[in-house]
Amino acid sequence: MVFDVSGHTLTELKQIRRTVDAAISNYEERKLAELRSELENAARAKGFSLNDVIGGKKTRAKATPKFRNPRDPGQTWSGRGRTPLWVQEALDGGMTMDDLSIK
Picture (tube, rainbow, N blue to C red):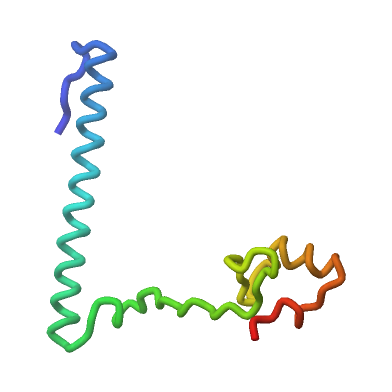
């Protein structure tokens, strides 16, 4: 299917492109939603969820804080990940990790 667009202005052509782009995006979203629904129904019919089948992202429990800032008790750290600035400052100031430990 070919459309004759030679008689349109640049502004009209840009509007046509925006309309076509939106139609393509809506079409793809609609088809993905339909496929997701079909897959969810097929998984449910077998006693599973779609996440069970495709290995959906597992949520991890939030780590328990193990250290507390003595100057600001609202600041805690689990000991995982990057060392917070307040921990480094405390260690540089002569404190130990045991001093920061939540007992």
